[in-house]
Image (tube, rainbow, N blue to C red; front, side, top):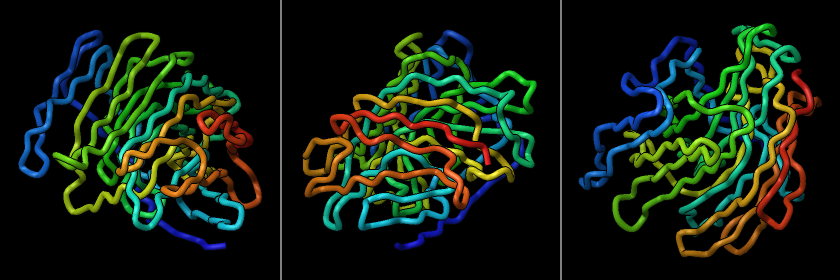
Length: 297
């Protein structure tokens, strides 16, 4: 068994993710560039910029303990599946669908920050490198008597997340991330609320000073604070069902939550020591699984 450690960055300050936008209208960001090529402007429709309670930057698998013999791992903050590319392979696409689960704040154990937190996302990288290109949803509780808050987001870790309000529990979501390896080298991140029609559609370049290696693809339920009651504990989310999960390699090989000659399928359980916090079921048809909340601490 190999133990891999990644740095954790938590910035406990109020951070406005975006400064423009209005409910029910399209928010359009200025176009960025990648490899000298102008990228399409980011468009967000049906959502409003969110002011996060704090900027939690833990989107790498913290204290990952991998069991190669069983293709399984435990982590302080991840639960779900990671597809790890072979040494000579790269992955260019990941997608999944899910319904936003309700968070039960009265049953939550608050971290020292006073918050409990959970997110659900799809993305590229993060398993064995220092970046994650990802989009998904999150929810948090600020005390056991508060109502849960829900938001959608995208993130080019190690940059901070960009978040928006406008989603609700019970909304059907699709999330996908595509690496445009043949032209710009940039990433196309799309999150769609199928229930309301709201969308995040953005092209982003790899963060300056980072190397986006495209060596893994993930579908993950995460506690950005690390699944322990210090900082941000895992919010009780019940269960979330991920469906229609797909992965594509740079070579154009299509698959899902199953090992092949291009990637290895890893099941990841979130644990605090001997205590299981959240865990994935076995994949169904290499495309679906249920991730279940087990405990707060």
